[in-house]
Image (cartoon, rainbow, N blue to C red; front, side):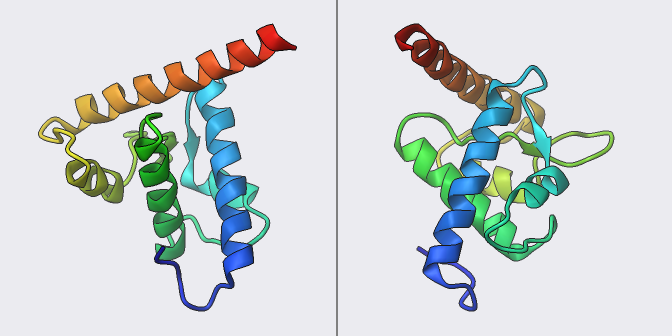
Length: 130
């Protein structure tokens, strides 16, 4: 695992867990996304800036782990403003994981749809078993 060398493993792992939980909650929500700023504010184990290399690395690690687990890249974090798309790092990672990124909007929409379906189904199953 690559992580910023000035962050201890415990804090990094806690920040990943906080980010993942916030991202899952976003995937289950009606909106389905959250901004980089919103995510950065929800991570309390580390102080991460919305545009930091550390946050990008954290998101990359989460996305790869989720994809390996068969749940998609958990791509719910987007820019504020007009485009409401994930950053360039998502598309680079998606290409590396074998996704077709020629049409970025379509690539993101397909991945987001998969992720939202997975987490909504998991939520539905949890509620049925409660």
